[in-house]
Structures are given as C-alpha cells and as structure tokens.
Length: 219
Image (tube, rainbow, N blue to C red; front, side, top):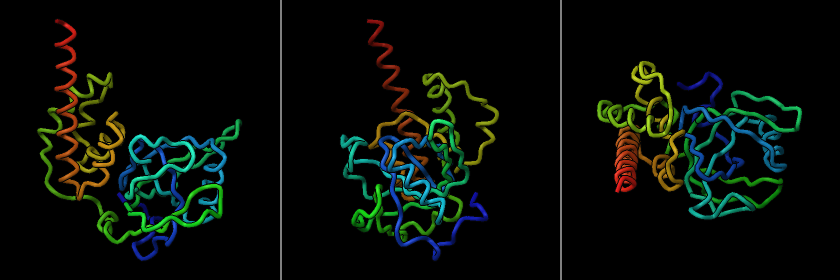
C-alpha cells in the first residue's frame, strides 16, 4: 500500500538520481533492501536523505555490466527510502519502497559523482494507486510451488496463499532469478494483470526447462 509520506503525482521531482544495477527489479509498492558501499552511491544516498529520499532504480542494457556509466534501459522505477542505517565499515543499508515507474526523458550533465536524469512520470500515473485487475491466481500458485521447490526456497505456503494479488506478483517478480531482460519485461508490463500473465509464463518455462535438464541428465 502507499505510505502516508509518499508524494502525490504533482509533487514528483523534476530530476532523479539513478542507480544502475543489473538483474535488480523494483516495482511500485515493492520493498528492495540495498547494501551501499561504492563512493558515488554513498554520496547519492546522503544527498537523497537531504531531499525527497527518492532514488531511481534502472538496469544497464543487456550485457553492459554495472561498471562505469553503462547505457541503461529507458524505463526504471523510483523508490523512496523508508529505512536507513550505517555500518561500522562505512556502508549504508537502506530499503526502498517502490513508488512509481518513469521513462528517462534525458540524462543531465554530470554535476555529482552519480548520474541524474529528467524522469517522465506521465505514462505511469496509475502506479501511485494499488494495482488492480484480474489475475489467474490458481495457475500462478500451481506453477509457483514446484518453482520455489526447484529454487530451494522453503516457503510458508499458507502465508503465500494468503498474500494479496499485487504483493504476491511483485514479490515473486522481484526476488526470482530471472534474466535481466525478463526482469525488464516484468517492469514494463502495462498493469498487474499483464505482469501476472508474464510472471506465470516465466515460472512455467523455468519449471519445464528444469525438468528437461533433469531428464537429459538421466540419459
């Protein structure tokens, strides 16, 4: 659910720091813990704490890696810092709560150690409200159980079954070990229903490919 401290649409900032990380997905209302240790991102975190506490999570384009200033996908998701702590060895431990997606309209000239962009929030105004739409929950749960078992995840199945639709879809999408391009497709899905369909397909494909590998190993 949206937090009482989250800004409304008209209060979303005109510029945003970005944190490019391969394979890391943040979705609206999802929670993402981060371990910050690189100098430029320590500076980014400290500056964000002085302002709106917003950080834009984006993925480098396929194969670009995280080092330097890689080209990034156009669409990311902004998260608001909802927890923050310092470690004795000079790291920040933060948690972002997903707020809204954005498209990168343009990247700003470098004035800090980290990158900033001009975000276009307009296509994602609906992100500020909880996701709705019909999902095939029965099919998703049926695929999810063997998928989690193959991943070695001992899930509390009663808790999984009681999880609301959006939280279930977002949590699995964010934590599952999908490929970066698949994570990006989940991010760019139009709405909850489309994201759930894609997630279910990815989970089912993972199960089938795992079964085929196991069958091949027996021959």
